[in-house]
Image 1: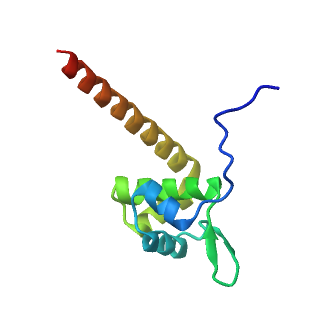
Image 2: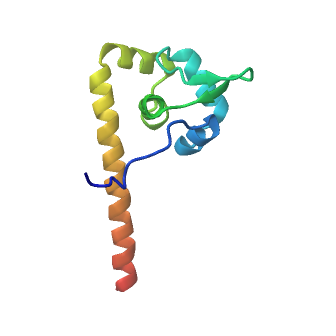
Length: 116
C-alpha cells in the first residue's frame, strides 16, 4: 500500500483557522451558523469551543461562495442551497477551480514579463 502524502491528517479546525481560510471574521461564521441550519460544527467543553471538520469547511466554502464571492443575500443563498444543493456545490467547486487556474495564469504571466 502506497503512502498518501496529500492526505490531511488534521481532523478538526478552530473557528480562527476557518475564518482565516476564507478571510472573514469569526463573528461572521457564528452568524452563518444561525442562518444555515446544516452548518453545525462540533462543540466541546463548557466553553463550547467550535471544532470544524472537513465537511463543515465545505459547507462554509459553499456559503462563502454564494454570499461573499457572488454577492447573494443570506435569504437568497439559503434558498439556492435548499432548492438545488448539488448544483450549488458543483458551481462552488467550479468557481474555486477557475480562481486557482486564474491565479496560476497570473503567476505565469508575471514570470513571462520578468523574462522579457
